[in-house]
Amino acid sequence: DDQPDQSLHSMLKQVFGFGDFRPGQEEVVRDLIAGNSVLAVMPTGAGKSLCYQMAALMRPGITIVVSPLLALMADQVASLEANGVAAASINSTLTRDEKISVWNRLTAGELKLLYLSPEQLMNGRLLPALAKQQVSMFVVDEAHCVSQWGHDFRPEYRQLDALRNLFPDVPIGAFTATADAPTRTEIMDHLLHGDGRLLVQGFDRPNIRIDVAQKDNAKAQLLAFIREFEGRQGIVYCLSRASVERTAEYLNRNGYQALPYHAGMPADVRLANQEQFLARPDVIMVATIAFGMGIDKPDVRFVIHMDLPSSMEAYYQEMGRAGRDGAPARALMLYGFDNIRARREMIAGSPASEEKKRLDVQRLNALLSFCEAPSCRRTVLLRYFGDDHGAPCRNCDACINPPELYDGTHEAGLVLNA
Ligand code: ADP
Ligand code: MG
Figure 1 (tube, rainbow, N blue to C red):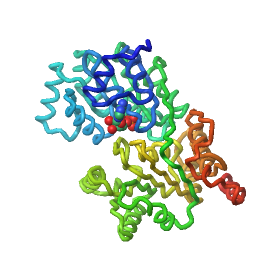
Figure 2 (cartoon, protein in one colour):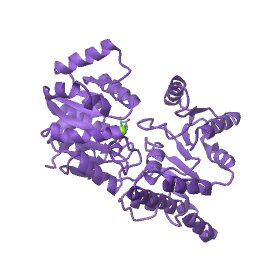
Figure 3 (cartoon, rainbow, N blue to C red):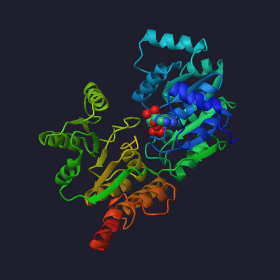
Figure 4 (cartoon, protein in one colour):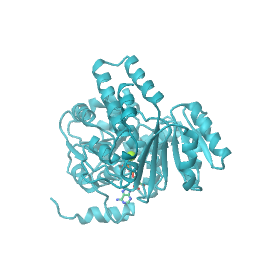
C-alpha cells in the first residue's frame, strides 16, 4: 500500500526528530514491518540505521543487530538511548556486571534492540536464550562482509548463513552501501536463502565534486587542493601506515591540524584521534582504510585518496564520507602507475581461487577505466553500480575541464597494459 502512513511519520518526528524520510527509507521500513526479508543497498549516509531501528520499534519483540565494529554499536546504542529507546550491546569491552545486566534485560524481554558482533551472536549461550524470546527481526549491517567476492570479507559473517534455518519465521534485514551484482547475489543466496526483496536506492551524491588526477608530485598536489579548506575538516587516505605518518607530519608543518590514524598505532591513541576528529570542526584525519566505517560526521568537506583505492566499492564508500550534510564537498583521488602495478601483482600472487582472481582483475579494470574516463566520471561511477544517470554531471573534473586539451591515449595504453 502506498498511503502515507501517519504512525510512521509521527514516530519519525517524535522518536528520531526528523521531518521526512530520506529516499528509499520508507519503503525499506514498510517491508521490514510487514515481516519480509530484505536486502537494502543504499549509499553511505542514506540513513540505513534508521530503517531498521524504526522497523524494530514497530514490531513486537527484540531486534538483533549484527554489526562489524564496536565503535559503530556504541554510537548507535548511545543515540537510541538518548531517544528513549531500550537498546544495548553485548561486546568484549563490557564488565561482568554490565554483561549480567544486559542479559537480565534481554531475558526479561525489556530490550527492543540488541547489537552484537557475529561471533557474539553465533557462539555460546545466546542463541538458545533468543529461541525463548520473541525475536522480531535479525539485522545484518554492512552485509557485504558476508561475501567472499566483496571487498571486505569477514569469515565470521559466514556463520550468519545459519540464521535462516535456526529462525525460519524471523525476517532478516541485510544492509550495505557497497554491493555489486555478484556480491548482492551472494548475500541473497547465503544469508537470505534466496527468499528476500532486493531494494536498491540511487547512488548519486551530486554535492560531491569528483576529481581524479595522476600523481606527479603528490605532496604539492595535496597542498594545492586543500588550500581552499583551511579550518575545515577532511579525510586523507593513504595506502601505508608509514605514508599516513609522513603525510600527517607534512600537513602539520604546513599549518594544518592533522592527526594520523592506522591500525599500527596504540588503540588508545587511535581512539583519542578519532574522538578529536569527531569533536572538532577543523581536524584533518590522515588514515589508512582502517578509519571510517560507520563514522557519521555530516560536515566532512573533503576526502582525498593519496593512492588508488582498492576497488570502486571502496572508493565510493570512502569518498562518500564527504558532504553527508548535502552541502558542497569534494573528493580527490591521486593514482600512480606504481599503485596499479602493485595491485596487479597482489592479485596475481594471492592464494585466492582463479574465479576470485578473475573478478578482482575485472574490478581493478573498472576502477582504471574510471580513472581514465574521458567523459563524466559520475556517469562511469553510477553505471558501475547499476544506477544510470544520463546527463553529464557538470560537477567532476572531466565535465569541468574536458580532457580534449591533452592527448591521453599514450597514458591510457600504459595503464591498461601495466
Ligand atoms: P548509513 O548507515 O546509511 O551510512 P546512517 O544510518 O549512519 O547512514 O545515517 C546517516 C545520518 O543520517 C545520521 O546522522 C542519521 O541520523 C541521519 N538521518 C537518517 N535518516 C534521516 C532522515 N530521514 N532525515 C534526516 N536525517 C536522517
Ligand atoms: Mg551504516
